[in-house]
Image (cartoon, rainbow, N blue to C red; front, side, top):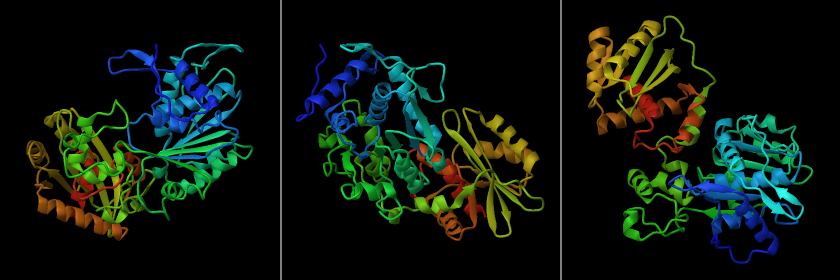
Length: 450
């Protein structure tokens, strides 16, 4: 017998929808065992406003912490709608098609492990066409399709009863994608916007603008932080505060590591508290302004190319980045990463790159194990190889110099870096250089070396 804690105040129709949800879907626990997908009370609060539970369409906007299961919940809701409403299309937009596919992967998993329910009208099951992997297509003709947040035109010709905008705070063309999406709902439908917050800028960030003005903009607002608002002392260990997370599967040890590493990022990612751009060492808008290259700059003859290398070994990441100086501006010409590659092999890779690009300077982080790589490369290539020792002072100089170059619009980065920053979940870059941000770290280094 499945024990279900229902959200108080559900109507009979809403409760039937929750029961259908539970009867249909299964998830795996930490040991790989299948069990019914029972939405928590906060997830039920979201689901009770589904288009299937009400006689009117309710636009929803969710400010949430990470890892609370909302992607899976939205995927399951979309599957039920698609199965019940034959021949429809549900577009799912995110910062890129890749991130939109995360929701589709959940949908595929839930569909393929769903149960058949005996109803009075006949058996009900999520019946997916498994021969197609790029979209979720059901045998009744309905589809769930991924849309890149950078491609608003791909939404314009669609007609849909539901539009899902996932991680909307990080979409490049927020206004355009929402406008195009609203037109695809012209025959009636509802928008679902879900995101962790990015910034408290209500002028340039449409997610936060809608969230803060939800009622006036015809949205219902939901707030699902990991811990209740105001309950966390960011300067104390989470274990000392007797905190209970919003969901039982939340890993407190991982959260404590996040808090001890960067309290500002922790607040944004887990407590739904946006960062003020003014506190960021490199603001999101500044980084975005410099990430304009659709592809790497093709090297021009007679202009110097500088190479920066941050060294890793085994599970750590070595990042190699190159810029060409053209007049007084710097264009990214290459980016290469290596993981689990020993230092002699890394040296061979760098020598190969030098033969191709003929670098003016090769600058290697020689702090710790980087010294070994520096010695390998120095022995083979010679005088244009230089060591850089990281310290608090050198990091500060690197950071300030690089920020000055960005503010003067003298640095041009690959456009994809914006989405890479999002994937590692640190969209607001602070002076404290994190292990995951080696690309940015190399940019700091480049500015220092220049």
